[in-house]
Length: 128
Ligand SMILES: O=c1ccn([C@H]2C[C@H](O)[C@@H](CO)O2)c(=O)[nH]1
Ligand SMILES: [Zn+2]
Image (cartoon, rainbow, N blue to C red; front, side):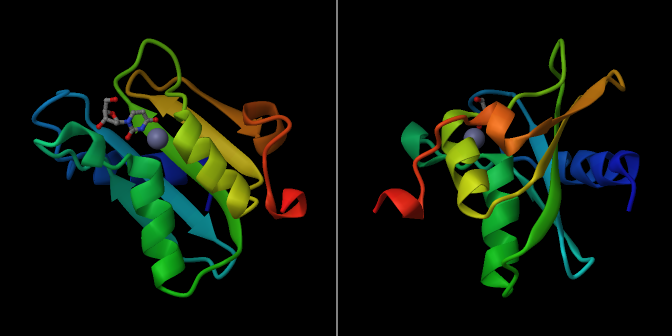
């Protein structure tokens, strides 16, 4: 699976976004070491804080299917530059040591960053 293919998967999941409040659809796709891809979208709620981001939807779907090892995650939204994940999603990505984060937008711009770049000095199980 190439980076571009994972971005395309994320785009397809973005179409399922439930975002009537922000009108900001986001899609994500996480590639597991098993080779399977799990996608997600943001899912909002009239009680705003209950909304879930696309990245966490995808990761939680994968983990609930028994996946623990991941190769990469792609995120896509209609942003001016590549879509950057929020802090909560960065912490969840760090928990599962997702090594490669592909940030993309609908204009075809994308870039790859590491977890260390996204969340330096992350809190982790080694701090407990
Ligand atoms: O990386 C991001 C950034 C934002 N959102 C969602 C949360 C909310 O539903 C909407 C606006 O912030 O976009 C994501 O899913 N992922
Ligand atoms: Zn998030």
